[in-house]
Image 1 (cartoon, rainbow, N blue to C red):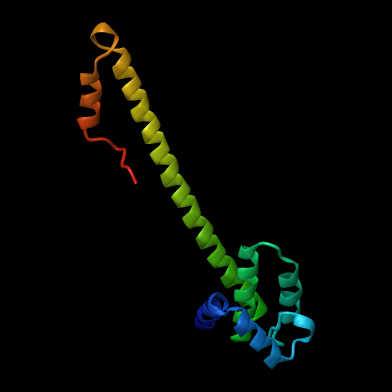
Image 2: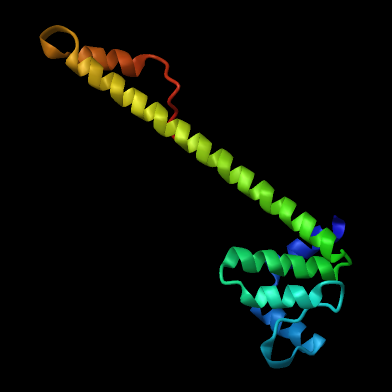
Length: 141
């Protein structure tokens, strides 16, 4: 996995000028993205040239760099997919936290509405003040 770390770092840091230099050094014709001649490099080149989204391009760039750093095609895919799963799991956790926050806000809103409509004379702001002073599970970001 050390080769992958180097590959991922290279993929993220390599700018357009560095890519152009790399293409020249590897003799890539017509601006085609150059990769090593290792296991799966041609497949990676073809797939990389077809993708449209930046996320997919970053994945294939890192995959190509992993190949260049000695990982087999299968190892590179397995490791890259593992990283993608970790990113997605982190995104799901963040969405779950945001969802819980919104549910807590809705519950507080419901409590405020109930306080306004209950109590003497159809409601009293003192009830709302009591709600807001009480410790709540709602935490504002």
